[in-house]
Image 1 (cartoon, one colour):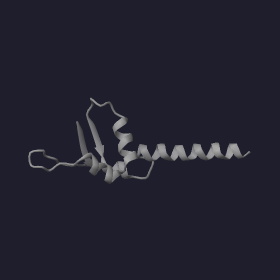
Image 2 (cartoon, one colour; image 1 turned 45 degrees about the vertical axis):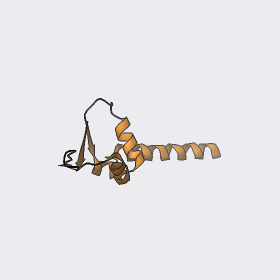
Image 3 (cartoon, rainbow, N blue to C red; image 1 turned 45 degrees about the horizontal axis):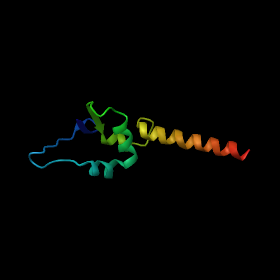
Image 4 (spheres, rainbow, N blue to C red; image 1 turned 60 degrees about the vertical axis):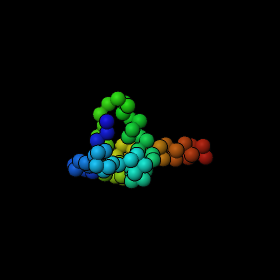
Length: 84
């Protein structure tokens, strides 16, 4: 089960009233990489709080941004080492 949040605010959904948020809408809002990272970082059978604002944040608070930044730095170091 996934609970969607926007910061501290809980995003309400209801299948009965047709007020739902699809995975496609989440991907369109936060991006495929962030969505993939957050969903794969948890066990499929565990409860998950998915913070949409955190997933879009470009700072070290966002684990996806941090991993992407670390990858870019490592790739740069390897590229510089190969040039020497």
